[in-house]
Length: 80
Image (tube, rainbow, N blue to C red; front, side, top):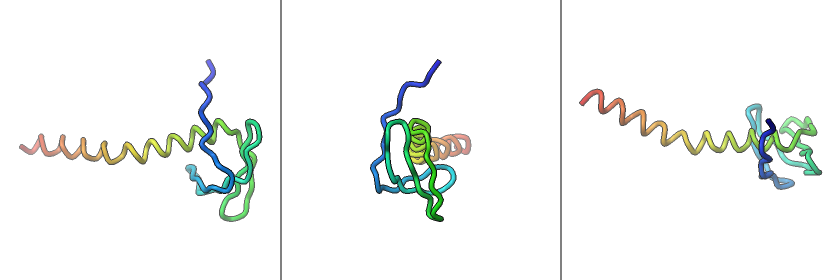
């Protein structure tokens, strides 16, 4: 089974983040995104994989406050 295609969120010149570090998008060509790390390393990466990683990180960041509130409510309910 193949994954459905992710909409690429990338804009040339913009800075994004993955689990390694921040990176700047140099170019998007077909199914490849060329990135540059702050230390100058460049890499040609699969667009769909980078998009999935980026979307997952954004999702984790936006879901984290809700998870903390839920956990706090559960702890408070056990104490009460």
